[in-house]
Length: 108
Image 1: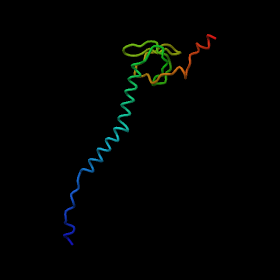
Image 2 (image 1 turned 180 degrees about the vertical axis):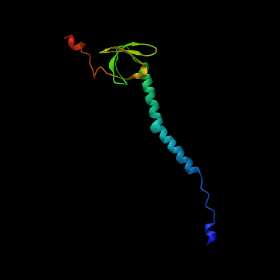
Image 3 (image 1 turned 90 degrees about the vertical axis):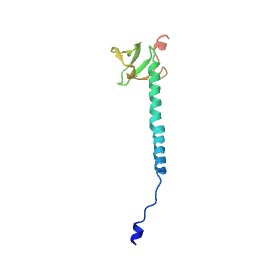
């Protein structure tokens, strides 16, 4: 009876474990890392294509129009005056369809 307990366990291969770890890494890459890199690339492209006169919203929620674009930031004209922000602080842009200018109504 003692000989049954003293028998060596069969050697198991590390290959299934390595394959599972590799599959988890690939899953994390496609579910987390790649979308984040794509989002960062879109934000950088958006910040590089800012134009004077565009309506924007900052990350802190400040609304305004871009008055000047400088090397180290942008000057945004708000209802309370002109403020200087870093380009990274620009969160998104308003569209003309969503917020049309009132100048077309004034001309009638």
